[in-house]
Amino acid sequence: MEPQLEFAFETRLTLAPRLRLENPRIGGARLSVPVVGGEFEGPRLKGKVLNHGGEFPHVRADGVFCFDARYFMEEQDGTLIYIQNRGFRHGAPEVMDRLYQLPPGETVDPASYYFRCSPTFETPPGKHDWLTRHLFIGVGARMETGNVIRYFTVL
Image (cartoon, rainbow, N blue to C red; front, side):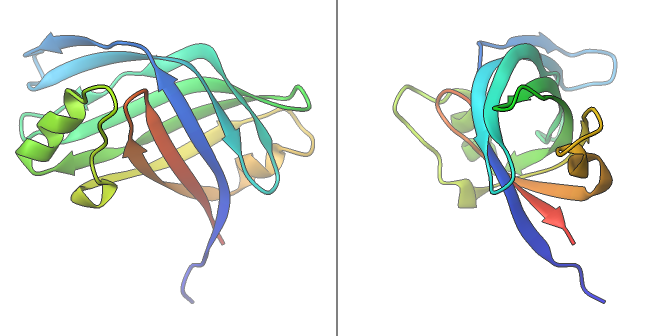
């Protein structure tokens, strides 16, 4: 039996300037990227991303961006949703350099790099706890002010 995917929602994150620690003992670099806002919308939920959390990616020596993002979202009905999102972003060195130093107004074609993730959610019991009982995959793009990620439920 082959898994099917169903669109769940899209998130648009606003990210603050990052800090970069070069050459930690594990190699590569460690970043801290605050998530300062955003919004999300899909067929079953809609709301805003709160200024409570961030990304703490490790950039491996081979250039692969291994991210671990944790932040809170608030559904328009007031429900708080915690997301932990892990994944990878990689591409040709020149593409990754452009993504890291994205000038105002510029975009990089998402087809030129790989940006995939796997989120997990925590919610209180109720109408949004379906998020805690399914697997999801995300397909992302790096934009000037942050990330845009489309999430799909694995059926």
